[in-house]
Length: 115
Length: 112
Image (spheres, rainbow over the protein chains, first blue to last red):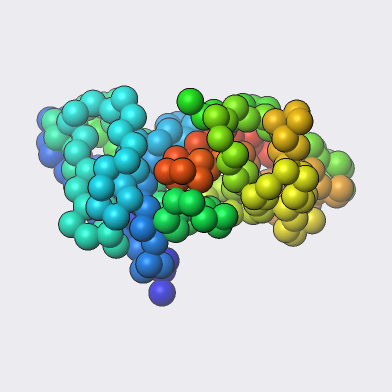
């Protein structure tokens, strides 16, 4: 069983479209994240949710909207896609804050290409 | 806010050479520290971690020691292999809110 799974793995779409990336974790974790990795491998946090509550919302265009229907899922919806949104998007999860073991477990990534 | 600075590279070494990748951090609290590795086309995998000062994390021949006095967590390996070629990320996690921040990543290439 995959611990953190995200779909789709590849997504090619035209500018202006709206798309969603789904993420599910079966680890029983309370915290979930979305990260964006650019072509230079730089990894930037976008959002963090703890028990369905938004904790971190970095400076991300409001075209990006996360949705957490339950604590095992954190989906990312992107409106009006732009060329600069092309990147690899990673979902991750970790245990609840305050503990010692707060390492994050990552999905395999979704490579988004906007043409 | 919290942040991580690491040697950006790229780093190219011959097989069996000694590896050091420097990492320093800035944190308001008392974070946990991590090294992650990303192989081509894959997600990030935890390589090692340390949760308090003077802890040494180790795995697969890699080591890093949590140095509070120098706010550092340098990654070392005594003898690298071709299979170690990957991108390495230093990271910290704030225990208050699980805010996990990553360094810029260091691409390591090991040649036979």
